[in-house]
Image (tube, rainbow over all chains, first blue to last red; front, side, top):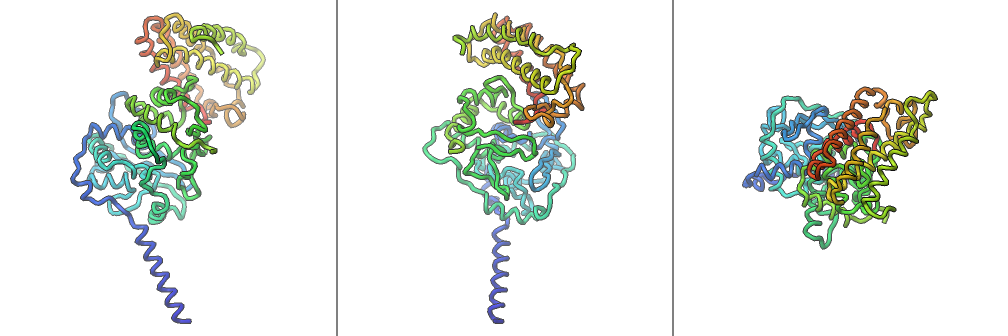
Length: 299
Length: 161
């Protein structure tokens, strides 16, 4: 009996240790990033496609035409787990000025901050993990040339147990996945669209419903979801929910006009302003081509 | 429904004027019910969309530029955007009071700004009216401010679906 208890105790310790190891941050090795040189011009394209400015500009910031964004942070994001606040990621002391390229790329692609701290998946590293490391090194080079803000980052306002950052390691084990959602024989445009939608522009973060743990339900990929802010819902953009032509979709992503000449509202207005309207026509057409091969909802 | 884009244009513009007459007038003595106010706002929006569509499809190159049709639609936009929107801000017709309404309650708190946004749209429509009949490039140039005006106001004052 006593031996059994000791065995059981040892097993518990081992399990806890195993869990501790499994939930440890898993960064991209420094060596894989250190040899790469960032191209800020291409980095701007990635930065815009990812729509970084939509979340990381101050909530009341106006972005004048041709002006670089000031990534002061401060925007609040409501969720079932509490309120997240986008941090200052401008290239100064209050932002990411002191971070190495590898640290920035790891924050973006693995959700790991300097010191091995898990970042919450409000930062969509679940998408960026699929991106090319070189693209994110380029994005970093662009980021370093943006204006500095000395605004202090706000702490998140989360409820227990979501305040335990180590638990994010378990979340990553469950939901982080480098594989594409849509597999198969894709044309070049569809592949480009997949790269943008799944890895960079991260459409699925809002347009795909989530399970109770906040993981994306990949079986309902892009099939629409509740709005985490509680206001209305986010539309189904699979062929089951959106019957627009590819050119309708591309026009919408460019001008914000629907085929009926209604306009985008809510968060999508920001996405169009900061992201898709800044893309080239080819990239918008690629997104449209990709959306047509997503399995229709309800099927 | 319509045979050609051109005919469709003419019909849409004609439709606007007859619909405008049918909308509840601003200076009416009888107060509007919330439902009637909501319906009037929606019809008003549809007419804006129809006429914007005539110009927008030309700007996007989906239909050929037609100076006369563009001018007609721009004239209609000026008229529609210049209507007195305050008359339709009936209490109880916001998105929390009426099931179909997407007019956020904040409109009633920020009425001054809301009406200023309408004035911005009206100014953008006037600028379009100036150039719509000139040529395609001028029309395309005036399209941006119109779109920004629509989007800017929807972003603040319209509930998502």
